[in-house]
Amino acid sequence: MKILIIETTQVNYGDDRGGVHEDSGNIVDVPKDMAKKLTEANRALYVESTDDPYKDRRFTASEDMVKAAKAMAKAKKKPAPTDPVDPPPADPTGEGQ
Image (tube, rainbow, N blue to C red; front, side, top):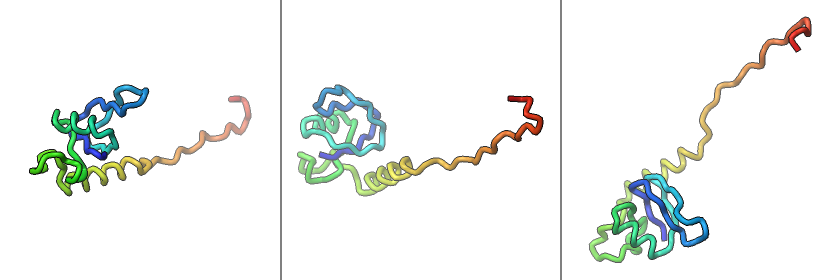
């Protein structure tokens, strides 16, 4: 069940890792019971409205929120531009080595 983390929190995925730190804006796949706990604690929102157990969809993220989170994830994956580093000038006498 995919949820959008809206407040930095620890997420228990139900495996041997215990709580895993998740930043705000991350979309993660968690077990159903953990999704319910995190959404009701106002730490996350459901990505799909069909996952939200409430009829009024009070714990469902808007399309704009999901779109923004996906754009942030895509931007994080891009490598940061780096400046080329020039090698130090060669020592013509060979004494510096």
